[in-house]
Image 1 (tube, rainbow, N blue to C red):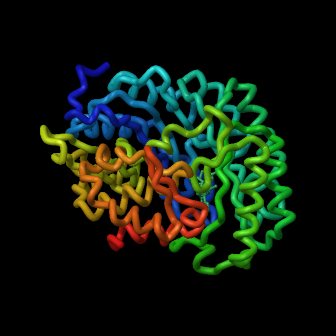
Image 2: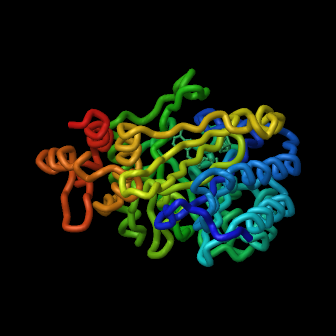
Length: 395
Ligand SMILES: C[S@@+](CC[C@H](N)C(=O)[O-])C[C@H]1O[C@@H](n2cnc3c(N)ncnc32)[C@H](O)[C@@H]1O
Ligand code: SF4
């Protein structure tokens, strides 16, 4: 337990913790996450380092606040043995205060070896799983370079339920190599039949520094991809999932609090190789607020071997232009937009900084100005990059 948090007055904002695990069994050809294929990752050493990293983070200004969520992401966190995850979460509990309703998510890859650890994770305090199903077609899973098949994805979900998880997200991607509309629909139908509480439905994108980028497979053209997105969205809503962000759909009460905190431009600590963090420190005056970003050494070897003084690769205070753009990049992803006062609360900037931009977006049919919040319209959501660009250029 901590002493009374010295939160610099920023206690209105929740604080989240992101924990990055950088290893996978093999590297998928479309993936640009900080993940590396490894046969025998040094789990114990890594957990020890994560806790040392957390100690450093907690010494930063603005960091002593109760945690509202923890997200163990990757890479493939479900490679970690149960006792190591328990030691990690016990270490987090010893060092911080957790809000009673805290959400603790762990990302898992389909596979019965990983799923055999689910009971341990549940007992360690993990209360939400996010499982990367990606597709339920054997052909498309192969094209994605995945090491699991559809049957394993289903079995993994069954094992998650048996271990007591009642808050589960399933990731699926669409616009896959060679996929047609009927196949995308069939995939989604299969996913809905598994009845998860939450679905993340992503369009596959070609990211620089991936094998797919270097040698692109044949992907559906943009019209077909847009059709898949639209039909998928309609189907998910009919199945009782509410879209609350570009790719995120949830049953009532099952929105991901950790990701919501990012989109609401909240604060978070980032520990682990390449992890990013964002913290705000409120000074005595209203506009006197500093928001800064942190990043850790990216390569797992560098992260494990750096001296503690050298673990952070950067810490950068955001200027007003950065703040406006980063706020827009996050908050406009939300279907319901953002409450007007969130802008000043999270950036410390006056509303006048964006009032003309918001009014211009309203005049062009991209956003609605409601009594209590600003909401992107269907047009704004469809051309989200254009809407966000207005906040970058100030017009
Ligand atoms: C951190 S990743 C991986 C989680 C887990 N290791 C897995 O692969 O199942 C989280 C999710 O991002 C999505 N994703 C990864 N790369 C993507 C890409 N190039 N385009 C669209 N979605 C992607 C996948 O759905 C993936 O499950
Ligand atoms: S998609 Fe997931 S399993 Fe594949 S390399 Fe990336 S993090 Fe690892």
